[in-house]
Image 1 (spheres, one colour):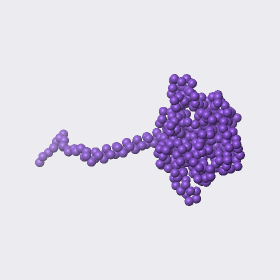
Image 2 (cartoon, one colour):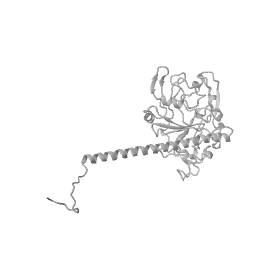
Image 3 (cartoon, helix red, strand yellow):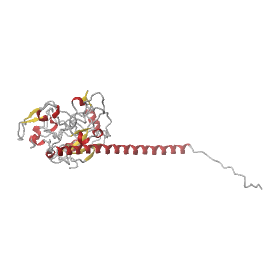
Image 4 (cartoon, one colour):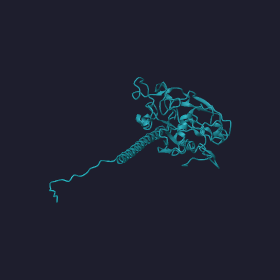
Length: 342
């Protein structure tokens, strides 16, 4: 009979992890790492979107503050004056009257009379790029694309003009709705397919689109003020106001419909942030997943095909109509169909 002392230890067999077990552990770690990365990206995106909305809220509130100091007047959406300072609109359709003369900057070409929300002209734009002395240039002391604008005294922070979502090197990410702060939309006569006849046959004289005073915007809580714009199609900065063709394709006087004359920046391909004239903000969820790629491919004046057909209303372009109905509601006709949210 064999006896063991209390001090003797019994040897035990120890085995390592099998290859299968190691692979399972590695897979679990990879999965957790992926979830952490996705969560971090989502948090980063939400943070950038919140920063963007805060910027646009400040821009919209600056318009309101300016109007209180200047007897209801608001700055122009234009970033520079148009070369055609005086012109005449003479509608030939409908019964809205005319002719009437449109005066840009009261007909003056002097730089001191420009009422642009930013001063993106003269030394403020060098070689097709927007400059601000001390911010992105030290060679042109008179470059004041941001600080020379009419809203600078109410914003006073370069960072407000640039979206955290913007991947470019530009100093300004936002544009103003061309139906805000204008004598007529875009304050210019540049479009090959003018809109005055279309407005007239719909019972809206072009004079009704004058929004040079905030009191002339009938529904500020539904009217776009600022929006992200990526004017990369031939421009190095966001040139002039942001506008899309307000006419409904297929209706009288809507020949040559241009659809997305400009387009919102698709830095987040699923969401577009913008502000309203009353200072509220919104993030719009893009309905057509192909739209970001299409706009990037076709550029300005993209006459988007319909997303779907309705037995009552016909062809519907969901994203275009959503923004189109927020150009100047209460003045711009909303038929023959309305966007969601109205």
